[in-house]
Image (cartoon, rainbow, N blue to C red; front, top):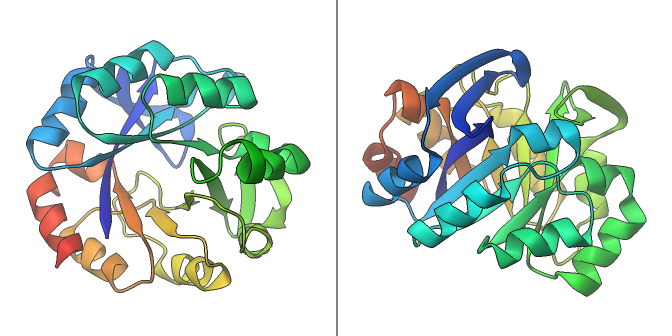
Length: 239
């Protein structure tokens, strides 16, 4: 199982939001490139990056920072936030990103997203499904949709997606533990590889996720607060 340490970008800084609330931010550093290098030096091979400003504005805001991260490390980088069209996807892939995550644009323009996955960028796109009480949320989690995450996951069962990143908003940034039941249901609803996100605060949480049929797990705040280390997390997910 992959470990994906997270860097959330806002105003060029490394931050975390509590349950996706832009008014409940903790700033952890001024140098995202140095943070990515530190994760790599500790043994990480993947990196999950969220452009929080882009998620809110609908336009990627941190492409230059992301390009510098890709140039300064050998990490496989996945990026989400503000990607709304083919040009945005290409811009990130050309910056060195391994795969691009789309949530809002995918769910609002389903026909276009399906064509992008199947025809333009097979194996390069990740569907971001962020749910609050099962209902999908978009636009930086500030708008809720009527469709459920499970309904959408079943629809893409045979699509050539790189993965689905499933985030339980209620647990994100809390360190209280991931939503194991919801993540298991998601993994069982589709053949697309699932990356679990939200709530990991201890090694026990990672051991619990490792029992699920998922491809990877994202860890953010726990690494910054020191309740989990990269080395310990790698040992937990790799067994």
